[in-house]
Amino acid sequence: MHKLTTFFLYVFLMDGLFSVVDALSSLHSANAGPNPMGVLFSLSVLVLGLLLFAGTVITPRLPKRQILPPVLFMGMCIIWSILYGDRGELLISIAQVFLGAGMIVGFKNEDGQGLQNYAAVRPFFTWKNFLLTGSLNGVIFLCVAFFIGLGITQKVRLGIEESTGRYLTIQPAGISLEERRFQRGDKEIRLIGMMHIAKSGFYDDVAGSLPPDASTVVLLEGVGDKNHLMKKKLDYGHIAQVIGFASQKESSFSKKAIVGLKETEENKARGEKPSKLEYQVADLDLSDFKPETIDFIQAAQTLMDSSNLQEAMQKYPDLKPTLERGSETVGADILDKRNAHLLGEIQKALETHTTIVVPWGARHMPDLEAKIKEWGFAETTHSSHQAVFFKNKVLIALISLLDRLPADEQQADNTSR
Image (cartoon, rainbow, N blue to C red; front, side, top):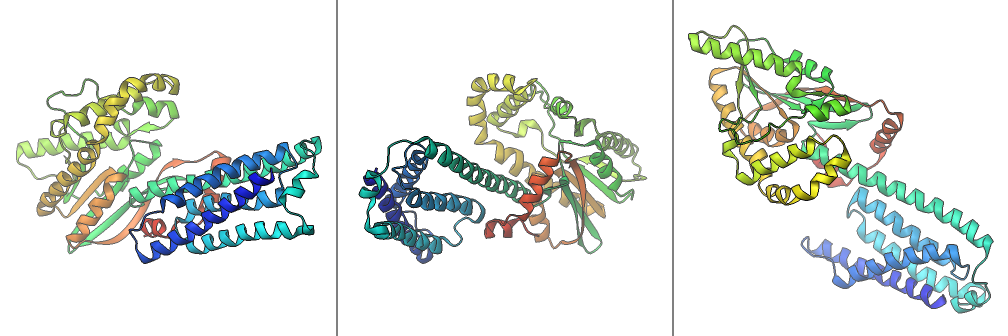
């Protein structure tokens, strides 16, 4: 036991030393990668630490005062790295070196006994140690696991918000989507983040925010399929019913858009100017996508049609190859190619209309916003539409706690407005 504990402390110390070297290297060169030996020591100290942490429950021969501090330090480092990234890496590494050295030197000086004598005078197993240490370690493990889970949840939350340019935000009250207005002279562009599934009131709110002016055009999202390439239409209605939400396809917004499209087409056929705002489809056709992307969408629809999670998991192995092939093309087709086409439609609309409204998925918005700002548009106002309301008190408390957690500086900068 004493040899294993001594070995762990020296590995912990060496891991700290390699971490200091890596931290200094990253300060000198941003492209410096981790030292392979440092990675090996980090993995070793993690595995050994967990084994010894569990071992203290079984035998009192493992000195808790020498094992628990490094193990708790590792847990806090994991939580820190999730929340803060590499911030403070050098100071943490130096602290690890001092802690490791202190554990080694301090224990040997305690009562003049080293690790070998400490282990020799203790029994291998006692019920008192098993019950007390087991309870203590269980509490420590649950606390560390909770904060690690909390940090990961925060990271995922910020990642979602960052990917949508904070057009979608997750707050204690629920999920909100932003509407931002941009002005250049007498021209205005309104970007409205949308979701395929939300509370029905969200779509009512968006539909009610549309300006009634005849100089306004709403550029609608919706991939066509003139060649009937899809065996089954992509539909979120089933999932919406399962979770008690409304599908955008069946919402007040879509119904208003369908009527508006028909009126716009009738006005154009008669050669008349519209008496109120126009609606236009500004999306691509499915034939513009690569075959792998079409197969990916079809496979995703098959999963969505599952009546429960178990059924979806049973389908997944057969669909996995199709989903993996499509994952290489879906981003370029579904996001980049459609955004490029939409930007062209916005430019055309600016020639004939004063206000252009773009109610598209929130993930499209960051690129669209960046481009129209390049055109000279500046944001004037913004508002939010509540898409989902959280009612579960535990979930509300969790999101409230996440709001109090700090985040990695770089990610926080990217998600701040």
